Amino acid sequence: MRLFKEIRHAASLVLMLVACVNIPAAQEPANAADSPPAQKSAAAFNFPDFTAIQKIGPGGGRRPLVMKVYFSGSTVRVELSPKIINLFVTSTGKVYRIETYPDKVTSCVSMRRDQLGFMASPLEMLQGAKVERTPAGTDVVDGHKTKVEDVVVTRADGKIMKSKVWESDEFQGVPIKIISEVTPDPKARPDAKPVKIGALYGEINFEKVDPTLLTPPDNCKPVEQQYKVVEQKVVK
Image 1 (cartoon, rainbow, N blue to C red):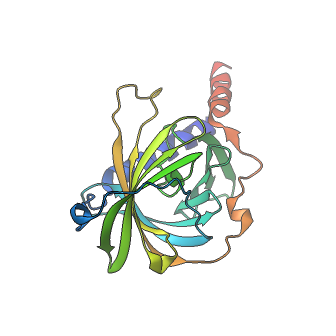
Image 2: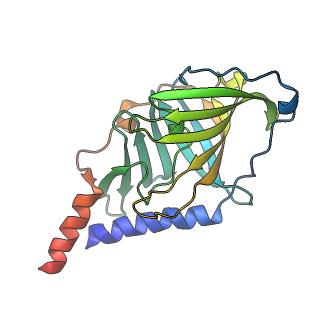
Image 3: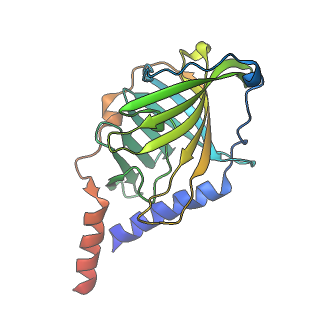
């Protein structure tokens, strides 16, 4: 029962945090209307290793959720807190929830990226089998000049993700703002409509990310197995 309670608590915590945090709604770049016809690009994003502070939440409000992120290759580590970590591994299509409890016991649950209980990662949503980038003007974000792109990513499983990305040459093209469209898991919520989630990135530091921070623990179990164990214990 402990595992079931831990998983349910983790999911409800993320949903509760998302409900109370917000990012300013997306605005059209100031000169988008004056830009020449957009020229699409199929070039994938290729960022160097970096760490940053991410402020994330749905559009329009006051209190963003602040967390640290690590990016290396196509893997993103998101620290909701020092004890609660989401690890997005694009190469496997998995996301891992890693939690450390006061008694120093660590639990790890793996799920699909679209399953209920995980806050999406805008940085991870820019990675996929096919990337289509369309220029959408220029803008200034937090005093930094940026180029803006409409990005459509198709994953290996055929799922399509859409984002608007603000990229700064001052930070080697790393986005300092992303507005992504998130589609809830249709199995959990068949009638759910896509929602937009926004993220701002600051304190960007280019440094090699320790590989151990990007590797799931050995005790990771699929969430389906965790629920199965709980059900068996209840029956007994």
